[in-house]
Length: 365
Ligand code: G6P
Image 1 (cartoon, rainbow, N blue to C red):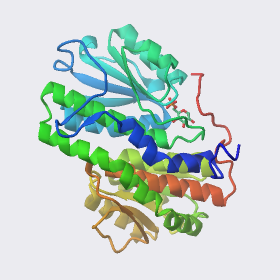
Image 2: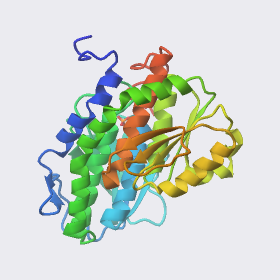
Image 3: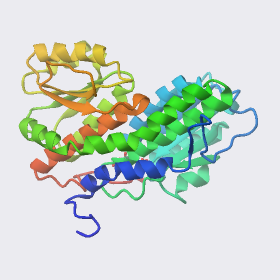
């Protein structure tokens, strides 16, 4: 067991640290940076992408947050309406055209019953279906019309970490492929996205190198009453995922919000005993988010921020530097939040790899 953990005390910490190499695997041989295109080895019937009306992502848990990130990329890069549905709530729905709809299941295991149920409903409605998964030969791959593998390697910790980054990276490549095919994305714009992706493994490594700073912050704030995570735009799914990670493994109360929503309710819960963790990077409307963080600070809340390198918000109690990687910068910020969750849980001696009541793969609806 100790050997399998490669010297780490938990699989989760090992898997957090594997992200640079997992991401390199995800991207290997798939980026044509000079040509401004990707080779994901996926195909669609002629004309299907050009006529596409909607990409509908279905997923659960961390994969759902990867989907929330990706939907924004599909709209921005592929110029197509993209929506995300919790798989257990998914119905084909009214006002849609099956043969102009692509339903994408995002599922690390490929075995989540809720996600398989959603894909079966999409297939029954006549939509085209697609899976983004980590698992060769998994059930989902047999039920969809096409699959892209995220190639993150096995993930043992119940709380998903490296697969989140690899899912988003794979979906970003798919967004580029769809955008190029539809003529919605220029080669120059594609090239800039691909460069961001290429820079991501190194950026994540730089974040991992700051682990001591995160451990100190975790020690300082671990006894707080609750933790709030906020962001805007691409920072929203990362805030939601940051809160999920913390609650899953530390059992502390944690919630993620769109920063603009703080004032519409959650602010009533904010006290000096509820730190706010904010995504203040590129792609996350950092200045506007910071205004909302300031509203929480006015009520006494400590504020921790993941801030783009070169930017500075001097009122933050803790500032984590995020390397400049453009459209995937919030993914690098997410690694700080993973480390924060890990160290809070570790300080409390929690069963990090097997949190109470949770399973790695949930095969019942
Ligand atoms: C379970 C796990 C989560 C995971 C979710 C979806 O709830 O505990 O970590 O995000 O299932 O799993 P999937 O394999 O479909 O990505």
